[in-house]
Image 1: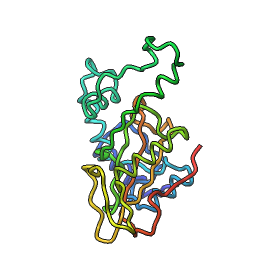
Image 2: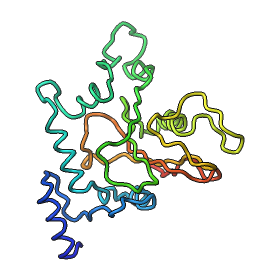
Image 3: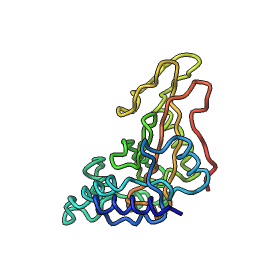
Image 4: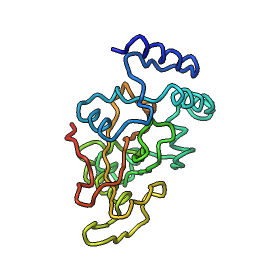
Length: 227
């Protein structure tokens, strides 16, 4: 439970940067941002509610949301999909009745999912050694049925086809927003899917991805068994 002093500090922050999110019982982020271990432990212990924006960050996020033209875009997710990610008007191929030999699910699965990796511009704060991305997608990439595709995609974004022990060989450019690894290092990542009650954008599939430099002998992904 927060101390009286911590509660006063939290109240002062909300007064300075008023927002509509209730952070009661959720400690403010560390001054230098969450560490890799803090994020990892929150994922592992299923305590993602412990990770939150600062009051200033939440205020700025809500101010940005308020500027969206709701006559043109029904919700934040629609604005993100069509304006920020610049996805075309996506029609579920299951609605196409031209090929009756396939089931609706088979038609949908036959279409390559649209995946877009972007830095999180309204994140909870993380330490400078970490980059915080969001992977937006037209499917739920956290599903076991999508895991192989997700793993391949993240590897291509952060490592390419590089074998750290044999030297780099990259067939495609790495993510444009990714800081290059330091000399003698490679990238390592971990990700999570927010529970429904913590999602500020509920209408577009997305997972939160964190990346840092590590020694080449370490695994590419910090993996947690997920349902």
